[in-house]
Length: 403
Image (cartoon, rainbow, N blue to C red; front, side, top):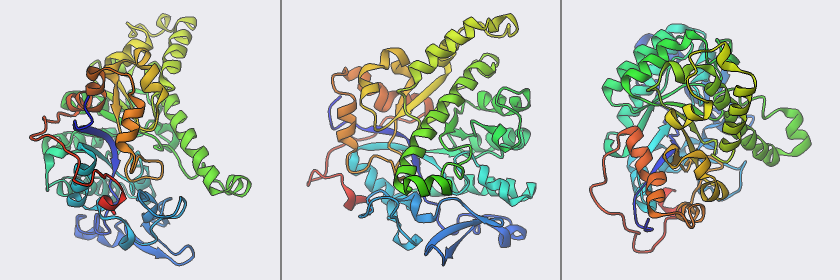
C-alpha cells in the first residue's frame, strides 16, 4: 500500500472535558456528577467519582507529545493538548498522519466502565453511562463519518445494558465497550447465561463488543510495594505488558465459554493488547480443548476454539513489528486491526507512519489494505474516504499538530 493511503485507527481515547457529566446528567444528579478537582497533594487535576478519585489524573490520559518522559504529564486540564479533547483539533491531527477514522474509547469511566460502580446508586450509575454515550455523539459532530463511537454499558445490569446498546445503535454508535473480566467486580463469569441479554443485543444490532485492556483492576498493578522496589517507570512498563497478557486470558475464557457458539454472529475485539500472543493462545486452547474432551460435556461446541476465533474475533496491534511480519498466517489477515492508542503513555505518536511501514515490511498491498483499512471499515461500517491523503507541505506529522 502506498505511503499516502488512509488508515483506520481502531483504538484512541478522548480526554473528557470537565463538563462531560455536569452538562448532561438530570438536574437531580448534578451535585453528584463526576467532576474535575485539583489535588493539592500531587498538584494534579483529577476526576472525582463518588467518594474517590479515578486512578489516573486528567493529564496522564494525554501524554502524547509531552516534552518530558512519563510519568511527567500535564498537571491541569488547561495543559492538555487540544487534540486530546477537541474534535476539530483531533481531525487536524488525523489529517496530518493520514488517519481517516478513529475508534473512540473513554478514560474516566474506566476501560470497562467499572469506575461508575464507585457511585453506589444504580440510577445514577445508569445516568452516567447514558450521559457519556450522549457526550460521544455530541463530540463527533464536526465530522461523524470519521469517528467510530464505542458506547459504554451499565455492565452490572445485562438487561439495562441490552436496552442501552439498542438505544445507542439507533443513535449511531458503532461498537460496545464491555469488561472482559466481570467476575472482578462481583459479577458472574463471562460464559454465564446471565450475560445473554447483552450478547443478544450486540448480535442483533450488529455492533462488535470490545474487551479493552485494563477493564479489570488497574490499581493493584501500581502497588506501593512495586513502585518502591522498581520505580514508577519500570512499574508502568511492567503493567503495560501485564495488561496485554491479561487480555490473552480473557480471550482464552471467551473461546472456551460457549458464548461464540451460542451467538454465531457476535463479533468481539481485543483492544490494545497486541497480536503476538494470539497464535500461542489459539494453539494452547485447541490442545487443551481436545485433551480435556470438552465436547463430551459441551455439545454446543461444533468447532475448535481457533475456528471460533477465525469466525468472530479480532485483535489490534500498534508497536509490534515481528507479529505483523511473521505471524499473520497463524492469526488470519481478516482478523487484525491497526491502532495507535493516542494519546496514552504507550501510544504511537510522531512515528505512526514509520511504525506502520516497519511492521508491514514485505507484506503485500492487499494485506496492508486489510490490516490498515478494510477490516476495520467492514467491522464498523466506515465509508470510503472522499479524498486522497497527502502529507502536508513540511512532510511532518509530529508533535506540533496535536499540541
